[in-house]
Image (cartoon, rainbow, N blue to C red; front, side, top):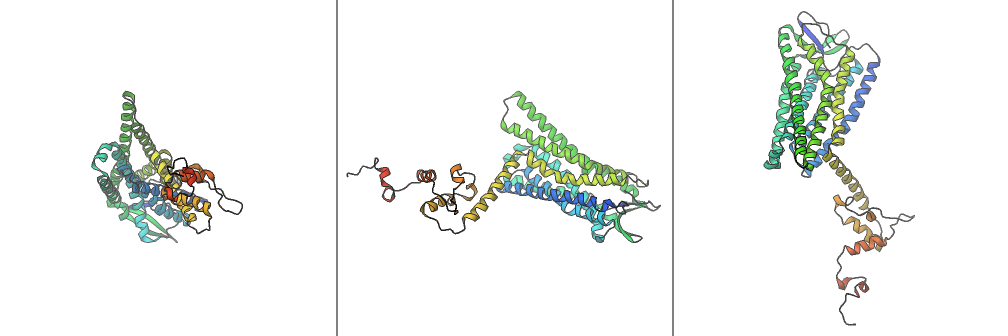
Length: 402
C-alpha cells in the first residue's frame, strides 16, 4: 500500500500497514498472527527434529537436507517476521527502531525467495536419484550444503533495494516505517519489480512444477508398461506430496507477490490497493509457512516412520529413567526387571513381546511373578549344567550313572 505520492518520490509502507483506522485490527489481527505463529513454530520444530533424526540414523539424501533448509526458512519467517507485524498492527505506528525498519521487508522477501529456490532445488534433487546413490553420502551432503548456501546468498542479494530505500519517517505524533523511492530511481524500481518477481517467484515455482509433473508421468508410464515396483510407487507418492506442497505455497503467496509487483510496476501512479486485501495476502504468506509441516508429516511416508521412531525413542528414554530409580526387589521381581534393563535402550519398547511390555503389580505396587515371563527368560538364556538352579529339568538328558 502506498502513502501519498509526492512529485519527488513514491512512498510505500514497510513492515506492515500503519495508521489503520479500525480499532478491531489492533486486537483481532495481532491475535490471528500470534495463533498462526504459535501453531507453525512448534510444527516446524517437530519437523526439523524428525529430519535431523533421519540424517543422524543414516537416511542421507539431498531432498531431506533441502527439506530441512525449507523448514528453517519457515521458522525464520514465523519467529522473526510475524512478531514485527504483530507489534506494528497493535500499535499502528513503528516502535522498533531504524535498523528493524531497514531490514524488515528485505529479510521477509529474502526468506520467501530462499523458500522458492529451495523448492526448485528439491524438485531437481528428486529428479536425479541415481547420481545421489553412486556418489555416496558425503558428496550428497556436500552438494546439498552448497545448494543451500548459494540459494540463501542469491535470495538475500536480490531484495537489497528494499534495504536501501526503507527508512523511518515522522508523521505528526506518529513514527512510520516507509519505503521511499526518489524520483530518479523510479525507473530502476519498476525494472527491479519485474526482474525480482520473475527470478525469485515465477521461475523457481515453474521449475518445481515441471520437475514434479515429469516425475509423476514418468513413473506412471513405467508402472503401465512393466511390473510396478515399490520404489516407483514410493517415488510417485513423494512427487505428488511435494507437488501438493508447492501448489499450496504458490496459491498462498501469489496475492502478496502480485500486490507487491503491481504497486512498484509503475511507481509514478499512486496505486493504493485496499488495506484489507493486503492484510489477507500477508496472512496467507504466514499460513503457507505454518501449513508446510502438516503436509510433510502426514503425506511423506518415511517422515511419518521417523516421527514414530522419535516418539518411541522419547518414551523409552522416559521408561529408562524410571527404571534407573533404586528399588528393593525380590528374586522373581529382580529377574523380571533385569530382562527389561538388559535390552538395548533403543529397542526396549519396540522389540519386547507383548507379555513383557506390561508388568503386573499388586495393590502395593510390587511386581508380581509371571510364569510366562519366567519361562520366556529361561528359554532365551544358556545356563551351564553345573550352575543350573533346576537340575531335574535335564534329568532325561543326563548321561551320569546314578
